Image (tube, rainbow, N blue to C red):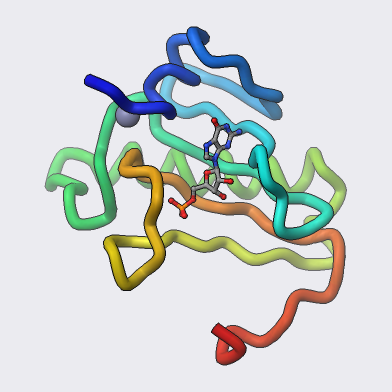
Length: 114
Ligand code: 5GP
Ligand code: ZN
């Protein structure tokens, strides 16, 4: 399967990792849209939110747990941050391996600015 994020999990494409455990990997976005912009992904290939199965909710909890940990480790937990998941064409998803963006380090604009 030709998936960039699976290759990051395997290590065949390099990334600046923030954390890794049995379930997830977190790494800096290659084109940061905020001073802190980290992506958290499950190691398992799940294409999008639409593809999360009944057995995957524990894993999704691990993704959120890792996002909380990333916020703490990058120093933005207290100042605040945003978690984003883009799903599908109109949601702006570009990479079809589910990921949560952890963004912060500055005052972020309102969501209605689109
Ligand atoms: P999406 O638009 O699918 O929610 O977000 C995909 C994100 O992945 C984008 O913010 C993009 O900058 C990031 N990205 C795409 N390719 C790579 C890569 O090879 N390495 C890293 N670290 N980030 C990537
Ligand atoms: Zn993948």
